[in-house]
Image: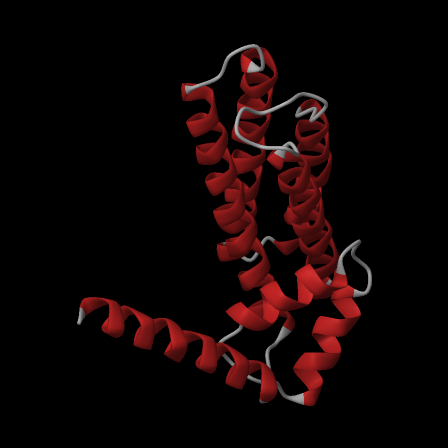
Length: 176
């Protein structure tokens, strides 16, 4: 009985998500397309924005809110993920430790971006780019991670760079 209830909830969420995407107004869709075409992964960018936007038409500030909030959430989850990997690390421990330290910086920077957004200091969000880019580059992914055929941090780094570029694009739009 419980599994049936859980399955029903999951299906309802999927349906709601696809309905929200289907009813995305033209103006919001154009904004999302304009932002995401400037990133290295249009699909990742678009799906993240569409899934998390709650009002239509969405203003640049609403898109910025989603972007900074999702970047902060992603960075915190990545830091936690690396910390979990560190518990069972062997030879890769120094590399994972470097990534943990790098993502502590990324998490802090994205948290500052949320604070800047809440204080309406949109132009200050642009200033986190160098800090995040440098930190992501510290997290090298040329090592094996126990239990994974491909180092999962390669994809985490790529997605972090996309989120950073989304923040940069939207913060320029909001502060203009």
